[in-house]
Image (cartoon, rainbow over all chains, first blue to last red):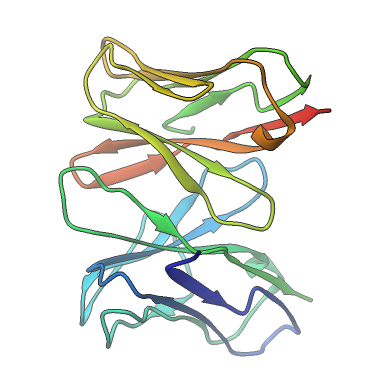
Length: 113
Length: 109
């Protein structure tokens, strides 16, 4: 039973299109994250948020942007998709605490042709 | 260079065999977590270890945190097909969490 939801699960689009990946959580977590996952590579943090109106870039440079207008919602937008953006995007959330325990969504697999 | 090196990268075994996978780093972590990710799903937390030398057991899975808090191992006894998945370790320093690339385990019936 998922408490964090990502849509779409799969998306195939052409180069130059604008896309938004949706992420919503029902746990009331303040912290939310977007990770990029590619085969054989470590998960890379691309954006994170500590609460409403807070957004930061992660350690992996990304051309995407995020917003956090509501606690439960953390969408990721690509203004002009390119084939290099093809990847699995994972959204996660966590509570404040000494140890970050992440709850992940099922992921959005993006393919840009 | 990855902060956390996981080995082996791939492991394919028969049901009933035992196995150990490793997560190594030159950095000291305040805690280390293990996640399992099944195909088409996001990673799910298995365990968090905090104290150097700590051993935690979760049914047939045994997790150990190195004494120096730089490495960890995951041992599975009598593996079952349901253990198939990508096992990820994640080290935490302050508020910074870094993941390894994972060990992809396949358990054949």
